[in-house]
Image (cartoon, rainbow over all chains, first blue to last red; front, side, top):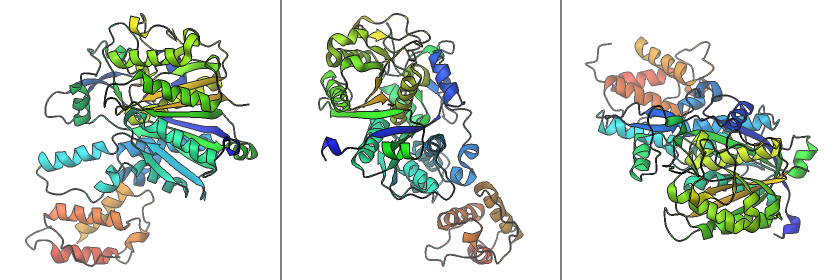
Length: 417
Length: 81
């Protein structure tokens, strides 16, 4: 399809299940203040004492958010996703009663899918001596459970697709949804991602890679310090984030509020190493998103970085930004909000895309929390610290998501006009 | 038998938003919120309760009465409720 025939894509709704427990306004206000949701988490059923810094959506009630029937047949990752999607749907001013649309779709990302259900099954089998699994197990663990339940609940008959690309899963789910709306295959897509990774095995697996931040009870809230001297790694987080992507003309015709326009989606694969990121691949994805968007480096007022606070990852990302933005890099505002909401793995891209949309729509840039002294290998851009930036004016922003496996995804948003 | 009816009511209380106003033996399972997957899960709960296994080729019940009779037929006879 030629670019001339591409449809414009509006962001008309956003929804979150976030660790602070409040609404989108509350969430954004907190991250603008640099408030962290991280705390020490003791795994509740481990046979040995397993304590890690983590971000939980502790006040989330699935029964309250999505109702008892759905709650009883879904894994927590689906519950977080359903609640976020419902919230985005409502925010977009769409009706749930009797709605059914054959060219509205779902595009969802998750890394681990129904990991908690797997873990419960294995616990029953190996610890409690059971000899069988619940008949609901398959429908609960499958990686497209969240997407399918969203489509059923909202009555969406268009393509219902799930993407599992590690930490870029939901940036890619948003990017692919953008492609479907852009090409005219869908009028509207509920896109996003969800993750519930606080299982014994996932917590131990990340710990074994030596990338989980070191801390004690007092310092857990500031354990994740992207770009900081002496940073020690990431904090796992759970959550869900969603946005409604809609054909621009359709959105205008129905009088929808438009947060901003999604104008670019860049993808690449490092094709070098499974877990060591590569700046060349990241540059390629950044350039592709900016090129499609028709944006110059000077147009980008904010980069929501992948910024996991690992030693290598942060340094490589900053290098990629310096190459992609050239001389403009020194004026580029960059922050990693993972310092506050943790690394939500398959939901991270969607959570950070929503934050990027809010930053652009409100003209406010959230900080990298707990960043006081930028590491020498992360210098060369304008790191946003403290309580963020409020009196700024910018017309476009990008969100970076870089996955293990080498898959990179960059989303570019422009102010609505 | 009454205990088994209680188990069905308990299952409905845990899984269904709108409880049936009048649950009778003639109530159709799919009309009171027990679809095919939920029925498997409910049969699973009966199997756990009485520590037995229903044969794989049983005719799937469609009413509360059929379900209760199915459980009575296959549960261990030594079970005293």
